[in-house]
Length: 173
Image (cartoon, rainbow, N blue to C red):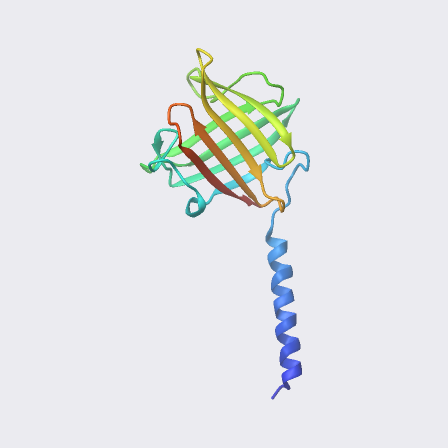
């Protein structure tokens, strides 16, 4: 039978090993100048939606964002998942942090809104949606935690005063 000091040492070693292993599970951010870049999975248990809706639609079942540096100063976003009705979502858009307007969706039809983007610091991006007649429809921000593993996107809708949507995402490897 092991002595209590050997057992204590074993427990401490196992605990330290578990902590070391857990920290190796964390994915490194691909760009330290823009920590929003990477692959993100929504955590609906930590998110809050106004009246159970996101952007006027029921909350999706699955929501992922892949945000990458596409080169030539462009950021590319591929938003995929499964909507509330079980249908696949596939939304793509590109932008620069230059204050210019970019289409909110690069789909098969012309975008109904534009977005302007601002990189505030490596942990925070702010953006504004505008209608075709240049009225603000949404104000959003993406903030990444100090450890780079959690991104929180907040949305304030112009047509829904007092409503603040909060989507929480976890970085994926």
